[in-house]
Length: 203
Image (cartoon, rainbow, N blue to C red; front, side, top):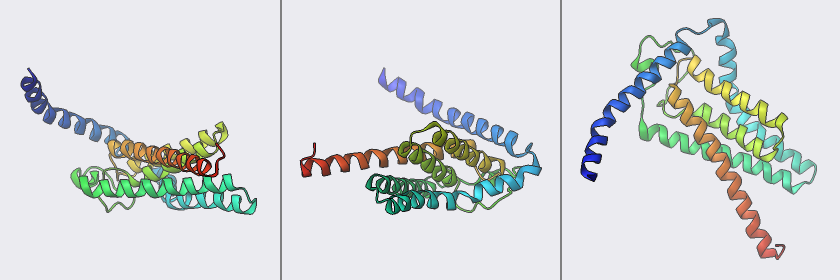
């Protein structure tokens, strides 16, 4: 019975992969080919803001902690920086492990409106944006921090598809990697702080 199930899955896998790829490119065509070209400049600006925002956010938080001599805020800045680094390392490693061609390479009708030279899967820009949004939301869990953070990260993900350099599945994977990296960094910092308190006999 198990052998039959395994054989069924092996035979089904190619058709599922093909179906997923068809959905991926159909959705991308709806976003990219039929986009409002007047918004290209806006989406380019959103895309290009990811690096500066991802680096500046933890530096500002950490710097604020130094100015105010607040150790807790400093630790939040470190956690945010760690989230960005982990997300960048994981997404870059996966890019070259999977080595998926960019959509404009495989499908000539997809219009490339911004730079995109490395492999496609996952979206590094989306990963960085969601790492920043999630770490910021965990550090400062207020609705007025969480809502704009995720609106911005989602806009980054959409911009990568609108500009023709990523499939929807690339963006989804990038969002999961970014959010997951931030959550793991947050949990790791809590664990480290707990260990420190135990050593000092504060627990």
